Amino acid sequence: MTGHDHPHPELPASPYAVRIRAIEQLLIERGVLTRAEVRAQISYMEARSPENGARLVARAWVDEGFKARLLEDTKKAALELGIDATGPVEFLVVENTPQVHNLIVCTLCSCYPRAILGRPPDWYKSLDYRSRAVREPRAVMREFGFEVPEDIEVRVHDSTADLRYMVLPMRPEGTKGMSETGLAGLVRRDDLIGATIPLSPAKA
Amino acid sequence: MNDVGGDPAGPVDKSQHAVEDWELLTDAITIVLDRKGLKTTDEHRRTIEGLSRYRELAYYERWAAATERLLIEKGVLTEKEIDRRVEKLKRVWSEE
Image 1 (cartoon, each protein chain N blue to C red):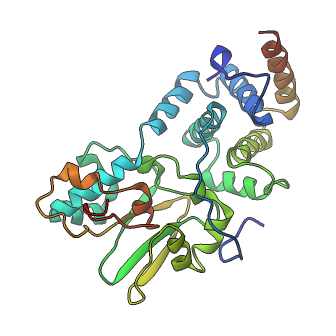
Image 2 (image 1 turned 90 degrees about the vertical axis):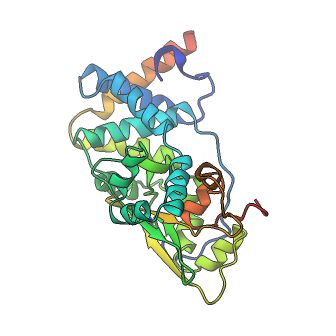
């Protein structure tokens, strides 16, 4: 990320593109951190993706015992699928039911279950989403093409530095007999945030 | 200024920008410093909220600015040496 693999320096996208490299060099020289640690962290984050969330959801759909463990202790359950989200941050999986739909936001900034899903999408970090998700969640979800029926309660969960949420959507109609992998393929990132719900295969 | 929950706002722009190298680097350095106990996520956010240019800066610019400010605040680096290194890097890069 430094030295010779930097992008064209004559056109830096941001003044911080240079500043953060200067900071990295100085921190390495001082022995505060090593280049290997920085690279390992980049690889770690690049390896996280919504696919992890989709796998957890699909397993929960086919295995009631796993679902109970996922809701009880997300980090421990994730390890069963080889997803290492261990660390100081706590996770809480919130389950959509025929009565309740869940939506996740971080009104203060951008907290997100990064250790499972990777970095949040740009819209999740936007002032518009953060402002409106708590006041008019139904209108926001409508913008994502999802109309929540009036008789379903909407619960909005505001994330913190120490507690990150992920939505467990309901298994869509018309998926009987589908393989776990096939089911995972139905779950999209925005379903795990609650802005949308997984589509049944006929519509997907 | 930063506590926007419930504020009036417009439609959610769902476009996604391609993450740049320096953004990945900013993300990683910030997290590694957290993990080493040199700063916390809460300090990071408090510092971001204190940035006078909060609304002008892009997301990872806020992260980079906050990480820099915290390193200076904690006496790990000085602004002067960061400025000097920035100038040096610009010189080296322009010669390549």
